[in-house]
Length: 252
Image (cartoon, rainbow, N blue to C red):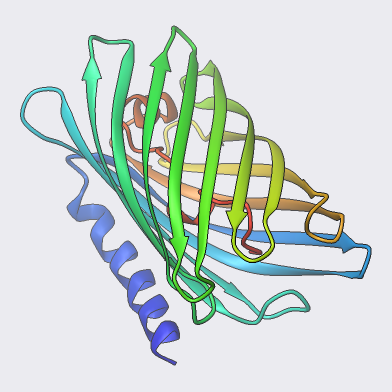
């Protein structure tokens, strides 16, 4: 019940805070995620609703603080839980072409607490953003160490039309170690003369260690951007990785 109350409060806060952050750059979004999982022990499928928010707050000089978070609400064969996640990033721009920094993240799946710290680097080309993330985390209740290395590329067809691709490796070290690989494709289109956009993302995950796991997920939704175009949002540091997307072991 406490988690559900927290999720409700987060939804209200995201809706109320968007106008207050209008002088900065960020977004608030809502999506539906459908996941299909198959293993040698069986499989399952289900959907979940996700809301998220992000804001980039410029500090003195080239420094920026980015705060982002999401709430996932599921009631299906795979999960019947509400998961809240949040992250805080501190980054700096080097010239006009690099953003580097670090972050800390926290997630509450089930009755567990997962925390993480990591570093990130983003290279800005004319119409392309290249991103790399490396992170270490711990699952307190499972007494497990978590590792991930992720890379992404974003291509801006125009300032308000973006195509994405990425790949990642994640590892859980506990009594039984497991590696997980995932790849994703997606995009976002922002409507002319509007803050609203639509987005979609497909993710495929595999793990030989987790009962030959194969999973496919499709996420579609709407987003409201404040402070500029999709490219402006990206270059301002408002699209940095969220805690909910950091490790590939969670089911949405």
